[in-house]
Image (cartoon, rainbow, N blue to C red; front, side):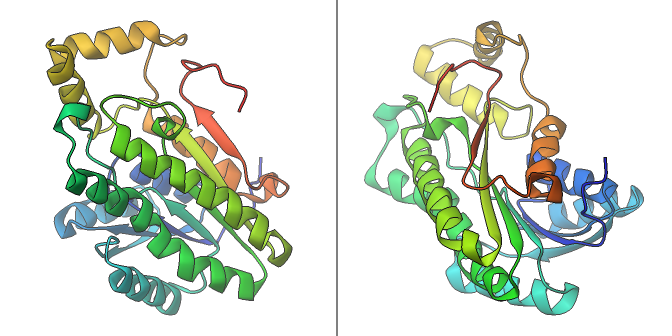
Amino acid sequence: MDLGLQDRHVLITGGSRGIGLACAQAFGREKARCTIVGRDPGALARAVDRLRADGVDAEGLQADLRDAAAAQAMVERAWSERGPVDVLVNCAGAARRTPFAELTPQAWHDAMQAKFFAYVHVMDPLVKRMAAAGRGSIVNVVGAGGKVASPTHLAGGSANAALMLASAGLAAAYAPQGVRVNVVNPGLTRTERLDEGLAAEARLQGIAADEVLRRHEQRLPLRRLAQPEEIADAVVFLASTRAAYITGAVIAMDGAVTPMVV
């Protein structure tokens, strides 16, 4: 199936590892040009080398997206050096999972900075540029924690919920100008960030992290966690011309662990 992504410029935040890196690999297979963004220069360089070794046209940009000015400068550099951005995939930032008794006001602020504002700081300048160009697609990889409150993910889940509302609102606002905005909500996915969440739950429940993982797998109707590549496949489809009439959607990818209508 031709997804119409060849030679499109795809900007992927959080693209040096996990789901973001899997997205870059998937877009690369569609012959898109990928610019990945990360905070850690070493991880970013390793990811670019890995992508290029796989034949992906990839470049890396270092930026701390919690800083609005840094995010703006990154967008301007990506646009000027690699051409207009056709697709934005927001996958950067993850609010630290914290048992509710350990939360502080600063932890709530940190969660919003790490997730909500890291996404908004990139979306805001790019959606306006896309609208001026008359086309564009944004896919925000958010998380199931914004739908169902978890005692170890209240601050991060609140940031996720805010992102869902912002995404739906931007989708409606910019649809007349040819820009689509969608959300993918992964459940537990086998990434480097998984261990942090398991450790938080283990502290809360007083059991080993391996046991937390086993219990999660038993709760999942599919009896396994998602792989980053499976999330990436959904992201690539939503960004493609094959999904031209899908905007404002929030796609659950939690293995049916939470059967919800809305």
